[in-house]
Length: 504
Image 1 (cartoon, rainbow, N blue to C red):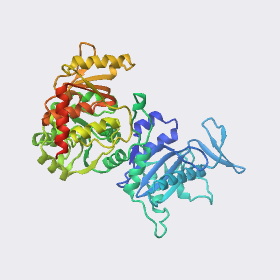
Image 2: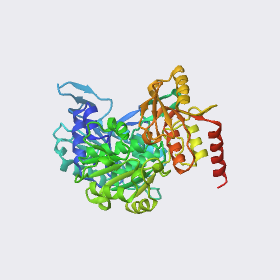
Image 3: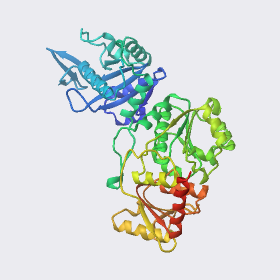
Image 4: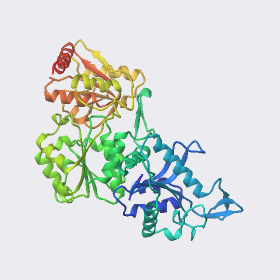
């Protein structure tokens, strides 16, 4: 069964020995296709408290099961429930463990009702790993209180099946929520990805819900052996890839993340550190080594016959029968680095489930508008941030790196950290360097797939296919502010590009 977050994260963060034990058992359970378990779920509505927590939320054959885990002892004395810790001290509980599980279940039901998910079966279960047998009561079914005797992989599997099979049936004339829809909504509620607050001018790790599209992808990745995920720049492809790779590694799979640009090592390295995931540029893949799951970022760079043949060698079971996930930009950045063969892409599509990310979680609304207006590229709806307008700077002479450094100095004087600024020379293919003014100067080829808070774009090229692709990569790197330097000639070419698009 898939755990969210991973078992490793639960073992690191949980202070409950009982919850950790249950998590270890759940991970080893062989469940149906939709099976997933979410740990430590914050419920944003609750009948009594403003916010409550469910220790685990399970989805099993379309049935949602909420687990309330109580480590140590649990006892009812003179009508009041108590928990008993390892020292033998008694602690009064406000309500019975079963009532806690039931009220959390009702809160989750209300959340999904608000989202018009449809009717679904839901059950509340108490888990007490340290007591020998569950207490008997007419208030609950014996199948809904699991004790020490259930604490084995076989025992907990049987217990889950028993609860799911005995779940209540739908009343007549009710819209019934599909298992896939429930799964997507649960991932949307409880998977957490970084969001950007451009108004404050900084990247913040808000614990916001994943966007609907990202949740759908995370859900589908866990179920489907082969996936093609399409998304424009800034739609969160690489973040989803890293999260999915951690989940696969947590399942004990041998995982590879590969890509054409070695610069992506800097991005992925911190996200997967300590997970035992191989992070190898495509050109450095060793002959003979195969992986249970292969993730490809910026896959449009490798979407050609030679690239697909090489991937076939590293996927256990081959590309046709193995487990892989390719993330690519339909706006074809391969003009910048790599080779994209549309016919090969059509063949690969036949082998895989396809999903599209439609919400931009990097660029401000103004940047998205510029990309759409000048380049006609789909980088998603700007669903996370609004932010500042795009800053156009008219330059009398050459709109080059020297002019960009002057703009960058003004940003520093306004309080921007020097390290948060990139100058992207659109005409260049050079590796990143420190310029004369000690700002990072890079190129579209080496910034592709990466991002910076403040980007200054200079050196507008001829606007042929390669030049347009390079400009697209450059302007979509910015998280907070985008500055574009243009000479009089540059502006004429951009205006001509807009007229050409309008005439199509």
